[in-house]
Image (cartoon, rainbow, N blue to C red; front, side):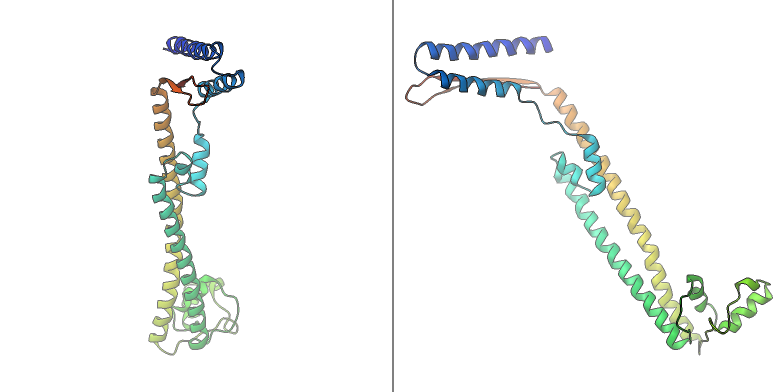
Length: 241
């Protein structure tokens, strides 16, 4: 097949050069016009198909889903990944803000209603606030279980709820903050998954492009009239592999 295409290329090129030479001999075109026509024919013969890198397509999709498809010239499917990524980021920042907002709320609630002193406390401490009415109840249980190292300092880490209702209200706010933090992990997982699927889709598109390029072979020979005062014909030969 390559030998046939090579032969056609030679024949087409010779035909184009013959026509240009004929115009020159007949005095209808000057040498400058002939040279320009020959350059146009050679440019059409030598222009290669634009090649795309699979690695770059995957990299673009990982950085921003849909960009790999845009790079490959098929953004119709890629734009769905871009919109999904934007929606996921909005969700992430919204949940992160809400989690921090609720965290401030339960800390303030504990200070006002539970008598918690200002300070830096562990996440476990704030979790225990919602499970026990006060530090005495908590320490008594840890002492009974002989877990003395887990007992809190009564002078620095004390708290005491006035009622079960206050304790439950605190725990509800604390749980809301914790649930938002857990949901953030799912959003991050969705962001990673969206990039992976976009990268796979970009590879699929590139494979289809390569397959189409390998199957598509054509040659076009055309003649167009020169409407300048000197007249003549212009021969064009284009090969596409």
